[in-house]
Image (cartoon, rainbow, N blue to C red):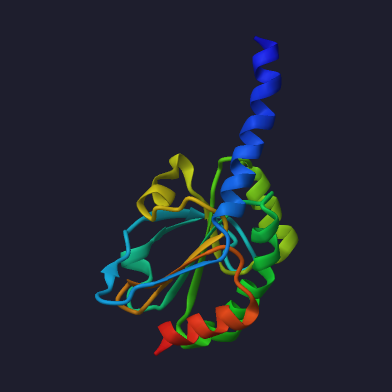
Length: 178
């Protein structure tokens, strides 16, 4: 039994790292008709903007806001690299109504890992863990990071799989602010 466990951890790690790499660098811009984003509720972690846990309901709490939804996990190197750009964009555009929501996958890391990372990184936008992976499944996330851009009507304008650079992020945010 211990032998099976010994080999299963490296195999799982290789599998999830492969998913992270395979999911890299892909743009899926909705071309013909926009589809409504799946609705969800998420319990947000504490951060400097949210001193208590808060339940976020996409439809009720963020009505008429353009939204960036970023699927990530703390031990994902491209996810970690992308966080400062997301934070910078949030600070720049929150006055224009932009909301950014970070949704942590619990595949390799715990909720506590996510909470610690949010505090250490100084993230001020809303972040919570996808307990049960229901949000990740409804958004069809297969690689990390994956980022969705929703217009004010909560229609999916763009899905990006992989690391976003500052210029791309800025361009995609400007699109949903219009």
